[in-house]
Length: 162
Image 1 (cartoon, rainbow, N blue to C red):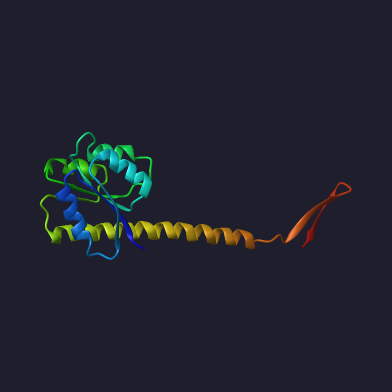
Image 2: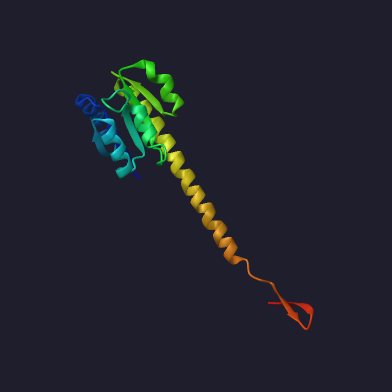
């Protein structure tokens, strides 16, 4: 299953760089690109990506405001992409998966992507494990058959084997 990815950066060259680096990976499907935070919130709600490359500083709505806006939704894995190192601690406080400092190289980008793939694969497997466990519990409950019936007659209680 492909990893649905959204690219959010107010700089066209920044979006292009990320798109180019992702284009070699057959497991990645870029579901959209956004140039500001409001577009990002709408795209996340609409497309439900697994992974978001999110710029920190954008006009009107920064990356942290985007995360606040989608807090109730299923949270995708977030890799912050920014030219400013001063937001790194805050990024990890909001559980970002990684923090790419521009201008990152291919090797650093690929390391962040590997980490994202591992986390997404783990959460998908966890979700499947929960679903399979629920299914097995349901099947076991259906297999439990009555072995006896309780019958009340003339003020007495009788147990009748099925």
